[in-house]
Image: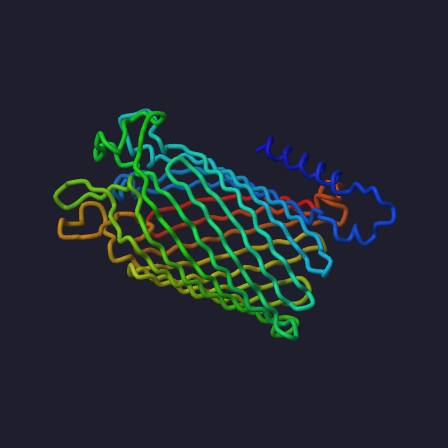
Amino acid sequence: MRRICLTVVGLYIGLLTALGQTTRPDSTQYQKRKLKVEEINLVSSYYHQEGNHAAVTGGIGSQKLTDYSNNLEIKLNKYDRYDRKHTFDFEIGVDHYTSASSDKIDPKTISSASSADTRLYPSLNWTMENEKKGTTIGAGVSYSHEFDYQSTGANINFAKKTADRNGEFSVKLQAYLDNVKLVYPIELRTTTGSGSTGREHDHYDISARNSFSSSFSYSQIINQRLQIMFLLDLIYQKGYLGLPFYRVYFDDNSVHVENLPDNRFKVPIGFRVSYFLGDRVILRGYYRYYKDNWGLGAHTVGLETSVKITSFFSVSPFYRFYTQSAMDYFAPYGVHTVADKYYSSNYDLSKFNSHFLGAGIRLAPPTGILGWNKLNMLEIRYGHYVRTNDLQSNIITLNLKWK
């Protein structure tokens, strides 16, 4: 993390130096249209969970997992000759995790292929805003890679404000073309297509998983204090939708690989509201209903309050409640039968309730953090998550912004 922070500082100073140079003393209009740094964000987080329903071992066993995540975002913008604002948003993220359950893919080895892994996920997005017409268009690409999973994504989006600029409709279309490496549990591997036990020399078959989604939203300013937003997503997935190293134990003690339908249709519908309770307090509420064709239904309710203690220091406690029904193909360890066409013992797809609560603190002094005026914001958030099926976790996140 220290090396990444120094890299961010170096990139930032280099960009400011390069973009701040000029060879024309009378180039006022040219300066206005130059590509410049809008902001740089660095987000680092630490996540740890404990539980005893690991899907790798059929719904029993340790779910201990630790994840370190770093994400660097650089936003650049410029105005063209028609006064349209172009924003270029580049992000690169790196996650490294260790998982006790994944180490049970091959318990005979000291460390199996997925006991620890690193995920790299860069993305690039462009938007063009026409402030006079109140329209925004954009497009983007993304990529994600880890040992057993690779994803390539693309998106396009459009937004249009109402004539009075108090409302805005937006739509976003996304596609992800993924490849899943078929890393089976050691006892279910064959000598062809499944490889041996040595990670460097293994050969695994690949299966495709494609996801397509359309997101619609409408936001409206009701008055100076109240803003609302309606959200609708339509998501379709096709291909290999399970994970090959998730075991399922039947009632006859036989072991199988998780088997799920090769298509899934999801429909989340949401509503957000923000209320400004005076100059120092903002209340934010959220509700989402979810349903899919696997029989899983869910409700989410969230509330966050931002309290400004001083002009540059604020505190934001939050709470989220979530409840879901089990999907049609879930059963615990040793319950599935040979009559079942589809089966899973992944407790993420079981019936449960969850609570997520915590708080954040935000510093944005006018002179900058530690007197460095370019580093204008520091935010730290902590959250505790607990689920009724014996999973709990903690996450702490640090966000630094240069502007």
